[in-house]
Length: 142
Image 1 (spheres, one colour):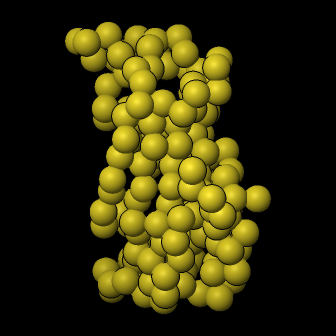
Image 2 (cartoon, helix red, strand yellow):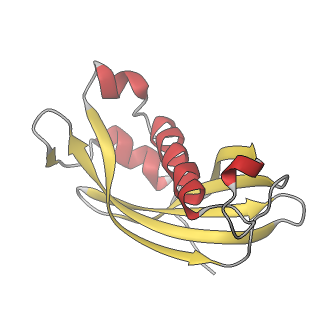
């Protein structure tokens, strides 16, 4: 399976900055929303955040590549997969695609730890989450 669509939107004029293209903050807002959608697909839904296991992934490092401008009116699609799976961490690969021409306009890798929200410490990935995450491992990054 590898990549999963985790976000889709039309870029609004309010999403753009004084240069006329989508503002950097909107790229990361899409990735933040995508991360929540993706962790739900891994078995950590909103109820786990609020009153269940109280677990969530938290970004500890990010590396990004801006490859093309994105303009108001364009449809964007975020796809998310897993680059690496550790004992307490996961590296999510997000790619933001311009829908009209299927061009990858932005890519970023988020190294995340699974955070115990009560103790504020990284914890081991539960087996069910680890098993589901295996389905989204990216075989070829290029």
